[in-house]
Amino acid sequence: MEFIPTNDCFRHLLLLLRIHKDIELVLDIFEKQGVKNVTRSKVKSWSTKTGNQSPAYRPMPRKALDAFIDGLYSEKLIDLE
Image 1 (cartoon, rainbow, N blue to C red):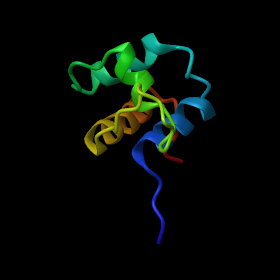
Image 2 (image 1 turned 90 degrees about the vertical axis):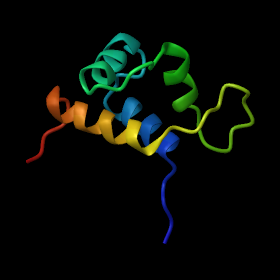
Image 3 (image 1 turned 90 degrees about the horizontal axis):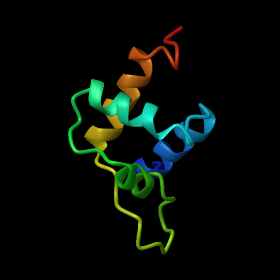
């Protein structure tokens, strides 16, 4: 069984929802979910594709991804139905 890395999942969500350029919205979602210390640079590093040999890459913690997805539901950017 293969799994998608958290960074790749986060990147796909940003692109699919077309919010990859609205960093303030992304930061707001994290803040409303209680995820502290998320900055523009963390969003950039977390949305860097896994395996990319960029010095900007940092692995995204699973808890941060889960909080972001919960925030998307809260903001009604994705629907449960």
